[in-house]
Length: 280
Image (cartoon, rainbow, N blue to C red):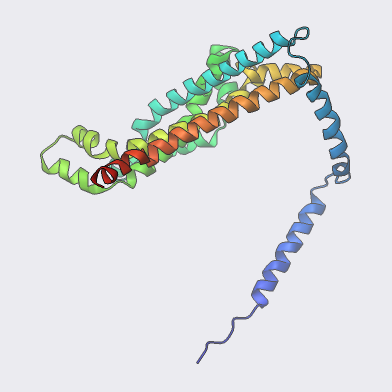
């Protein structure tokens, strides 16, 4: 005998309640919704002003020098992101072991995890304003250090989760040989988690590129500082050039990083097929 069909009243009540909450939020947010009708025209106007600089003859006037300056400062932002990622990777790797429940004692795991949670809760902007800029002053060094400290929380958590999901077989095999704890970690844990952890580092590098541009607005150097000056002076033609440089370089770095991460995680498919092809 077929069971009775479930009632749809609860589902309808949920949809009704959700719709009422959405409508209430739209009313209470007190937004100027009429401005949305003006947005397409404004975007078209500003887009035209920015396109004027991008489409202008690159050898006209000061624009060749400005293109060079934009790329130079974008490279500085990449350097900030890279140094910050290296700092975060070096600090987070041992903290990841200390935060892994299958490696460290419970008291150590609890304490380290709370430290990582605290670092993740504080944005890079706060680290830069409260710690790095007063100590190191304006410049890319303060931005790189702020990015590095901010990266520790996320990378440490991801590293600990990767360590907790390892296969215990190699660890037990290393212990059965009488290896010391450091050797067990070196040969039983690190080879299993290193490819995934390196992929995390590369992914964090992509995020840090955007963070370096934001920190530049505070005076931490890089392309963000130039963009802040241009917006303050309303130089829309040069803003367009700067945005094009940021988008092009960021997309290229993201594609390269994604290819490297895929190679690290998936391995070389051609090498995997070579033994089978040689047998045939």
